[in-house]
Length: 167
Image (tube, rainbow, N blue to C red; front, side):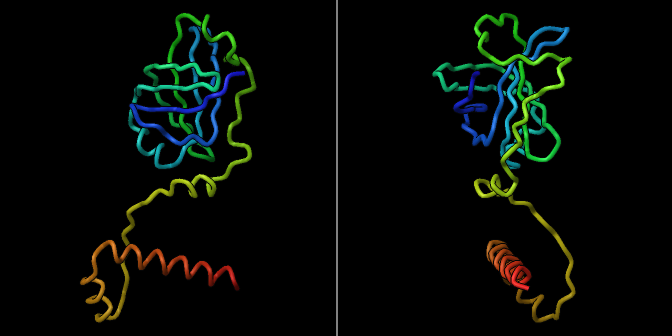
């Protein structure tokens, strides 16, 4: 069975938590498919892109360069499905084959959690909310820089979580 050592997308190496590479057989032909568990940051970056230049380094030293299509797989963990049509499958003889009629597909989610992924790459999201505060606090907040406010709120939330967990 073939294993992927590293993945580079558009010249940028991405962190892959789990993967499965295989040949998908359908009535229309063969496709090289790569299922990847990646971070939410990576999914967000590529979710609106149709084609990518992908370089796969396999554990046996082979390098595969291809233009691949992108599908975002919905479900539990952040996943990308990269695929490209194959005319000649001779050089892919040792790859696992999955037929469109098979009920088996690689399950790459087992044994990994979103918390483990976020320890490596935590997505940062903008959030807006309305508060009712005393005027002196409002004036103080308005004088602060965005970076300082981000740090303050992160610290307050973590402290609050710790207090909640200790109850």
